[in-house]
Amino acid sequence: MRWISIVVVVFHHCVFVSRYDPGLVRAIVEVKSRLGWCVPVFFFASGFLAPAAGPVGRHLLRRAERLLAPYVLVSAIHFVSLFVLWKVGIWRHTDPTDTSVPEFLRRLVCLEGTGPQMYFLPYLLVVSLVVVPARRFLGAFPAVLLMVLGLAIQCVVWIQPTESLGAGAEKLLHYGVAFACGAWFASRPRRSELLPVALLGVAAFLAAHFAGSRWPIDLWVPTLLYAILVRTPLPAWLAKASARWNPGSIYLWHAPVMLPALSVLLFAAHVGGLANLVLAILIACPACLALGSLVARLPGGRYLGF
Image (cartoon, rainbow, N blue to C red; front, side, top):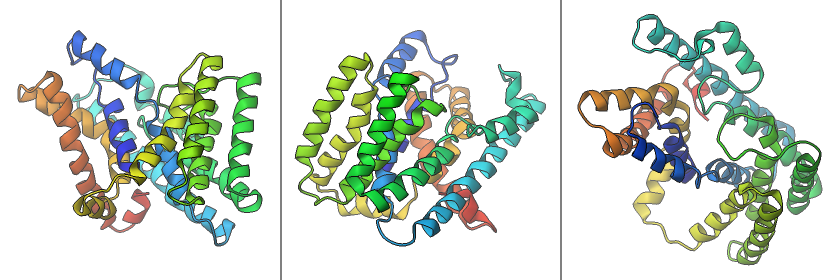
C-alpha cells in the first residue's frame, strides 16, 4: 500500500503544465482528480504498521527523530538546490518566495517544508502523537470513533478537508481517521474485514452526499484497497523487492528537483508528451531508490530517510 500511494504521489507532482500540450494537461488533471486517496492510503498503512505494544513514549520519541530529522534536512537540501539553480540561471522561479530564506524558515515552522511533499512528515508525527496513545489507552476502534468525531466537529464548525494534495491544517483530522483505521484493521483477523469495509463504504458515500464532496470516499478507499490486497497473492519476487527497498526514498527525493530535472532532460532529447510523463516517473523511482541507498551509507545518513 505504501508503494502504491507513493507512486501515485509522484504522478501528482510530475505535471509541468507549461511543458505539455493542452490536451494532455486536461487528461492529466482529470486523472489526478480521481487519485485524492493516495495520501490517506499511506496514513492507513502507517497506522497499520504502528506497534500495538511497548512503551508509548519511546515509540513517539523514535517517531519524532525519524520524521523531523529528514523533514528539516531534506527541506534544507531542496531549498539550497533550488537557490543554486536560480543563482546560476538554470532555473527561473515564478514565486520570489521560493528563494527567500525567511520564507523557507516560515514554511519549516508552519509544517509545510520546502518541496510539495515535505508537509507529510510532520503531519504524520502529529497524527501519531494523537492516535497511538488513544489506541493504547482507549482501544483501536474507540480511537477511530474519536478521530471521526473530531473530523465531524471540524466540518460543522470550521471547514471540510480539501481534496487536493498539499499542506493544510484542515487535513490533519482527515489523515488521523485514515491512520486510526489502519491501526484498527491491524488489530482484526485478516479475513474478517469485508463487513467493516462495506459498512464504512456506505457511511463514506452518505457523507460524500451530504458534504457535496468526494473526500469521504477517498478516505474510504484505503480500507477497500487493503481488503483487495489481503486476498491477492503477490509474486515472491515482488514481495521480496518491496521489503528490500524503502519507498520513503522516492517520496523524499522525487520533488522538487529530481522530476523536473528528468523531464527537462527528456525534452532536451526530444521526448515529449505522454512519453515524457511516463519515462520521468519510471526513471525517477529507481533513481530515488538508488539515491536513498547511497545517502543511507553516508555519515548521518540515517537522518535522511524514514
